[in-house]
Length: 329
Ligand SMILES: NC(=O)c1ccc[n+]([C@@H]2O[C@H](COP(=O)([O-])OP(=O)(O)OC[C@H]3O[C@@H](n4cnc5c(N)ncnc54)[C@H](OP(=O)(O)O)[C@@H]3O)[C@@H](O)[C@H]2O)c1
View (tube, rainbow, N blue to C red):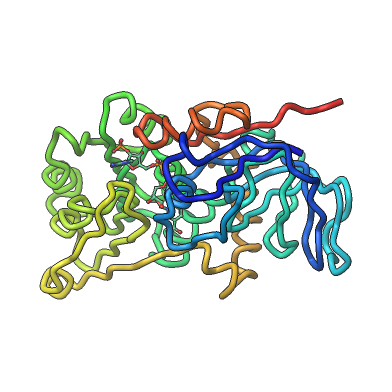
């Protein structure tokens, strides 16, 4: 089987090699899947560069999430069998033709999901649902501001926020990206590169500010968000795509009675896997009702990973980019 492999951390164009490797053998409760598609996520780039909180042992195949068909099961597998359609998550291994996934980190995929939707579904939708429902308890009628609204997690946060009955505002850096936010259902949008998003949010909320702010960008955007959050608002720290980890003055947290809430979704695999399984069923139900519809920037071939990562690094993707393997036979 072929797989991307890296023997050192660094820039994708320098360290990634597409190589023929021995076929994988599942052990214990592992599934071996034939990868039909994999989702590209911002953390993949950080992981390849050695800048992510989880550092796989070298050499390794990057890629955290994939969709495919079970080809073999380890001796301790109890849930899935050969031929099942599953999506799953792991610390690495997805950018390949075959992948090993722990059975407890795999989820049955309904026939209604095509490859492009299933390949990049898991991480972004789960993250946004956990953040808005489990962490911030967003209620119908509340206002939600989503930063970086055209991105992977951003598009899912807008759609899920709307599905939960919130009035949703979104920020993005170009006119084209603002249009993606509108198509996802955002009621109001503002270009945070050019315009004053604090003034815009205040205007849209009659001076009150947003009840929940979802921030995958970090840096100054998170700091400034404390100026347009409502009294008793919840500020969700999702990520730092802008590259800077911000500091928040504690007096701002105190004065407006706000909560700053972190989310590292991957940790729930260890701490509350049941909640992840329940969330997956709720997400499928929203998908079936047409309330969430994955935004696919494009589907590239798996062997084009380096060009795809280049687009991600240069902020030229909206929604998700997925990598697909040609179906053989
Ligand atoms: N907490 C969790 O469990 C969890 C789970 C998944 C992802 N994340 C984090 O969430 C963040 C976004 O991930 P994603 O997969 O959605 O990424 P993405 O699709 O690349 O989206 C990131 C967005 O951030 C904005 N951005 C602002 N400054 C940027 C910069 N300097 N470089 C790149 N993008 C920039 C971009 O929008 P504009 O161009 O419009 O500004 C872009 O749409 C990452 O930090 C990731 O690690 C966290």
